[in-house]
Length: 251
Image (tube, rainbow, N blue to C red; front, side, top):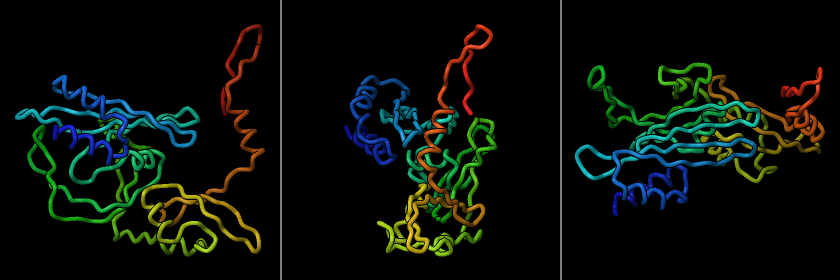
C-alpha cells in the first residue's frame, strides 16, 4: 500500500522512528475517519509523550498525517504541551519540538505562507518565497488553543552565532567537533557540551543559542556532591508531624 509507505516515511522523518509501522498498518485497515498513535521517549531525565494525529481524505481513500501533540515532562514535575503541524513545508521534527519546549531556539529555512479566505474558511498556502530564521517559543504566552506563541528572529535581527562562538574562545583543537559542527548542532536547538581551556586546565561546559539576546547561554555542570544533594532534597519523602503523615515538598 503506497499510502502506508508514504505515511511511514513521514512518521520516520518527523523523528518518531519505525516502531509504529505495524500499529499504523492496523489502523489504516480499520478504515476509520481519523485515528491517533501514541509515542513515548526520553532525553536524559526528561520524558516526552506524543500523540500523532491522522485523518482520512474527504474525497479519496488516502490518509494524511496532520499533526502531533508533544508533551514534555520535566524531572522537576513540570509539563509543557504543544501541537506541531505536518505539511510539505515548515515541518518540525520531534527532537526540534523537544528543544523548543525546553526553551531553546532552532534555525531553519522556512517557506513563506500566504493567507487566503476569511473566518472559518481561512487557510495558509505555501508560496515560492523562502527565508532563514531562528524560531523560539514564548513559554510565557499561549494562544486561544493552548499553544505557545512563536517568535522568529530573521537575518535582519543580526544574530551572528559564529561571532558568539569566537567570542567565547572555542577551539576545535580541544573538542571532538569542529566549529561548523558546533554551529550545526546549536541551529538544531541542542544544548551542546564542549571543552574550554583555562591555561593548562580544561573544563566541560554546555552552550546553547540565544538569538533573542544575540549571544550564547553557557552552563557549567554542577559538582557531583551538589547534584547528589539536590537529588536528595528533590526526592519526595514522608515525615510524621502531629501524628499525621505529610508529604515533604520538593524544592
